[in-house]
Image (tube, rainbow, N blue to C red; front, top):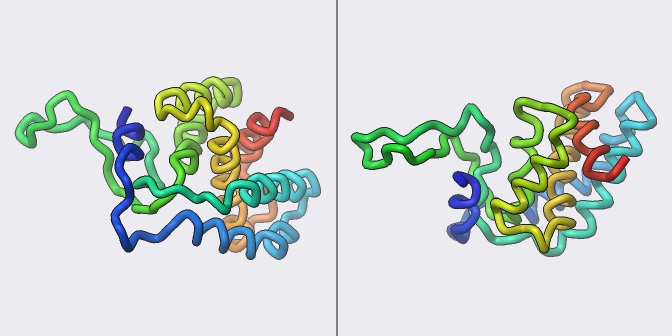
Length: 172
């Protein structure tokens, strides 16, 4: 519900955009994917890049948190007039498609058997049922982003939970 409230708001002017993020990821992908030691990881990230390529032309205009995970949601304080309301902390504001926000809820408290169920619940909560393929593509974009960051930092394998999220969303 916190995420649904956030992405219901159009992003203010001047924020970095998911379009710019996607453009940089797609430009960096060929070189950085090649840094991974495992051929299956390379194929998986290449498939994530292909999914992002399909939606990159329509990056969205909603206000995204970019770092909304369980540790960044707290119960509101009564003295702030928010008693009983959940509030988000530590945003990394971005203008883009709400599907880009789903990854942290799939990765935090990771359970491989819950990936598809959580994805379905999130798309429903955000009203993205008719845009599930876009949400899936942008979620795979987060796997790509994390994989590229890892490769840049010298990691030669994808994080196992990230790889599993991608496999489950790709139906593998």
